[in-house]
Image (tube, rainbow, N blue to C red; front, top):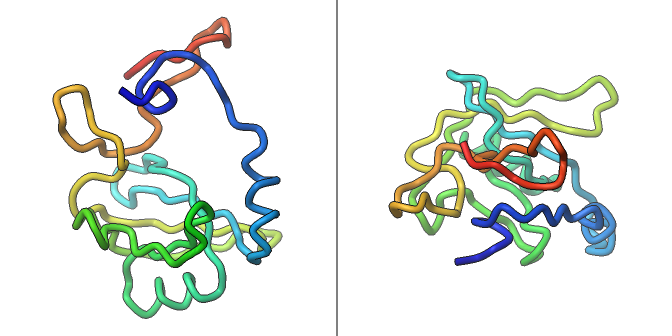
Length: 134
């Protein structure tokens, strides 16, 4: 079991944006939202090439900040996210991809081995020191 992804210990990564900045890649944060339910699925990043590919293919394409390459969501798993619309925030420094999933969303699995419909499957406890599963 991967404790970070499956555990209840709180280990928030406050260095993520610094790490993204160190990639020397100009990116915007992208919030991915289920267009039907309104659920926030996950947050990713897009550079200009990823946005162009997203608009061309009408599927979610992001920039992988860990692998430093284009990431066609579902390219390996088959769990593609079809684009319904792309929105831009007021300051034009983040994007919202409203999507329809074709399969699972998160790369982690449920304890039974099934796909997850979003990456936000845990919530912060009221005391703020632990994670609780949905």
